[in-house]
Length: 225
Length: 225
DNA sequence: TGCGAAATACTGGTATGGTAGTTGACAGAG
DNA sequence: CTCTGTCAACTACCATACCAGTATTTCGCA
Image 1 (cartoon, rainbow over the protein chains, first blue to last red):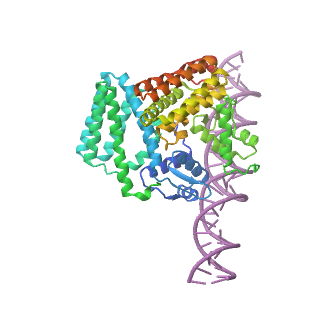
Image 2: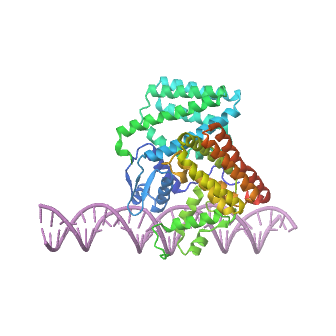
Image 3: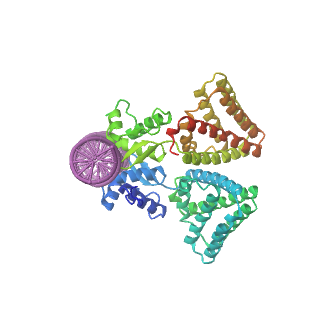
């Protein structure tokens, strides 16, 4: 077999990853105009790989490519966010239902451990750790629901929402609320109560609406609409 | 230069659309090896726009691009199909629930007209017309559920399944079954019976499993796994 | 001074040449 | 006959140059 560790990445992928991280971390603010030539110069490569990276980022709605005019870091859009939110809600609901049907007590320890770790993250007000544990929690449920299914691709639209969450405060009170939601979700799973689980998921995902509204009030110039 | 129709679309998009249609219609069979140079020659353009089109098709899992080796028309994969099916089921279920809540009698005529048109399509065994009407039916429900949301993007993964359906027989009996499913769904909507609607959607989408199994039995060489 | 038109300085898109890497076949050795 | 090493013919990828639009500036004129 050829190399097990396929470290051979195309330069276009490297550019793509670097720009994506900068956009997602808001190191590059929404509305910033990007230049193929400028980026190419900065990375010391030709314009072609930069161009490919731009197209990839455009497909993820992270760049707004206006032919012959300019390409800018995509602003937030209530429309796009609503679409991503709807899609994620639909997926998470069905994932939860599937997990409910596949549930057995062997799955409990992992989720309980993740939940208790979240409690400590709240006590220390460690927002970054909490974000990681939050993602892990949803991931664990996904694994219960449909192990063979690819996780990343299904929720790749999540980027539209994740980017905005960087601006949220993530204070202790808000994190505590989210942890309580998680506890409710885990409770619904253990009791195999599909109706209760459905309500818990909807409540949990509805939390981001307030976050979005708050960010929009604080940074209206980051929004398209 | 192909300035016959001075389209605003860039040539890469034209190549992309043409190849996508050929792949979706199975004019290009799974496993067929593609060559940038060959396609470029055939369309009378340079290799660069062809390359971009390849990348776009690769993002949709319609092409299997193996760097420095070859790029082939993606074979069917039970894994990918299962993922696409799961995703679509989740979306359609939530769409139906949302439509159920937004339902009013003004929506009935459009769906009923589409349904009756489907009946005539079955009587004339017009598979192509039926396929169009089937898509329209689901689209109409989507419009009831969430008018401002983009329809195409949400279900773009549908391509993974649509391509395989070209190989299905679409005989009168099968079409009649699907129309009956649609009637059941419309009935659930008009009665605003969420539980019944849920069951009807799940039954309807489960029909494709038999189709996939039949195609896999008839053409095992079109599959990866 | 106000305003419109032309020149200019960008942008993204395309064509072409060259490079690195993989595959497959074929010739020669065991 | 089998195995192996070398070479030729592909492949995708990157760099460079050029083209075609669009926004902005600037200069001439009223």
